[in-house]
Image (cartoon, rainbow, N blue to C red; front, side, top):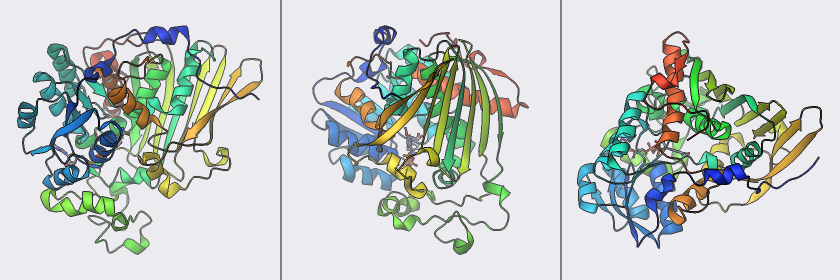
Length: 466
Ligand SMILES: NC(=O)c1ccc[n+]([C@@H]2O[C@H](COP(=O)([O-])OP(=O)(O)OC[C@H]3O[C@@H](n4cnc5c(N)ncnc54)[C@H](O)[C@@H]3O)[C@@H](O)[C@H]2O)c1
């Protein structure tokens, strides 16, 4: 057994830093002007409050836009006292002339704001997923090319300490030439269920979890494997949530008469923050944050499985489960000369740092928490015909494994910092992640047909990521 640090930088990885850096879109100047569209949970907490607290000396929010006036007011109070609130997005751009537009609306609307910003000559940062279908994806790519401006995609998972350590090991070629990858993600009955309560429950809003959630995972795969996907075959069902449950259902949890016998009853009134963000603003748009997970209109899959073939020959087996008793994931990379295994939060592999399943996700999303390495995440590297090596990576229980703060530092503090592992993500990365999810959806809709990524947009998959 051997403990190793993971800071070594390979020659190949350094070469990567010479490539175009999408983060240059927001290189440092005098106090920069930022506007935000979509002042919900992620907008206010992560791109609003956290950014102002960490980089407030260098930038200021000058404009806010949201279809929900109440949430826009809240955002102004929480982090942008001097920002002007706009009923109209175009007006906001024309009147504020920002250095950066931040898009944190519902997934299916991202393209609208990304394209308008580019067309008017502004750099734009969008939350993942970049968009929800292939047509919108092509429209974003076209607009970016025409504008000469840049799209940044907020892929925070890449920056987590564990994801970065895995990337470093693969860049160091620990398993030899990669041939296949197993990647399985388990959402628990608290966090997984939450997608079925919210706007995410409709494919027309989120692109389904194939896009909304799995695009995070597909981006990790694309980045780790360092190649582009070429083909996808997928299976998916809705078997657990929604119309499958016939015993009882209601509109949402707060007024529900079945509270006492529903295991998925969720008491949103316990959270002052959620009550002021959503319940207090229902009067503007009728949006119920604590929707019933048994609603008949739910049309996203709750069981998902795909095989993805990459241009460099790697084949991936991927699955996403949404009603697991525990939240965690496993990945394994098989190569010609060995194998790398890693995992997160598998209870019996966890050691003494027990995970509270009900609060697991909240802890993960916590932005205020000081980054402290508690215990270690692990990787096992085993060369063929040799013993295994255990590699320990300091575990950070804050903001997506520490990824959130590193992503923001790169964008707001030092966009030109060396990027040996190419963490910075632009529209091509955003597109490739989304397109795997879109292909998976199409595959299921077409009787599990093999879908070619090259048929979805004009992006040509490359053996080595561009
Ligand atoms: N990277 C991550 O880890 C991460 C985590 C959470 C959310 N997100 C992403 O952030 C985005 C926002 O998610 P959220 O959890 O904050 O959701 P939310 O529902 O809390 O906020 C979305 C906001 O967008 C507004 N909105 C919706 N449609 C609009 C439109 N057409 N014009 C203007 N405003 C509109 C809503 O009123 C709401 O205030 C999503 O794209 C989501 O995928 C990413």
